[in-house]
Image (cartoon, rainbow, N blue to C red; front, side, top):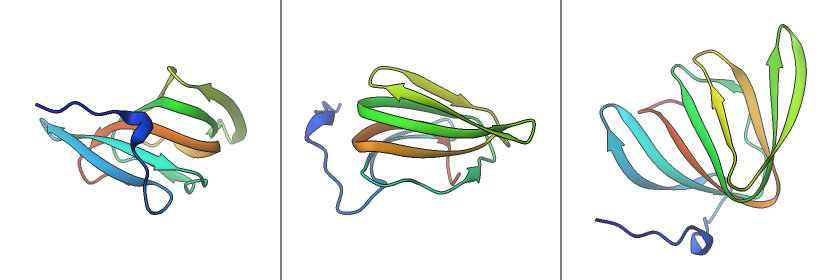
Length: 103
């Protein structure tokens, strides 16, 4: 069993992660960040839950770049091949559930 106080988790660098669990080929990880990630497409589905802070999620749909602000407690789902990039607004802690080994 684990009890995790997400607000106390601090990484040494942007997108540092604490591995929480691996469930049937999917990883559950807590990320800490204060810098944007990189544009990418996952090779599987991704569930992205903002636990603390806010994240500007940029994504492409039909070749157009769009943006959505995700507040703490809200969820972003990206299907396989959906191109996106997360930009935290200040410091953010995010729970990510995705296929093991996905970028």
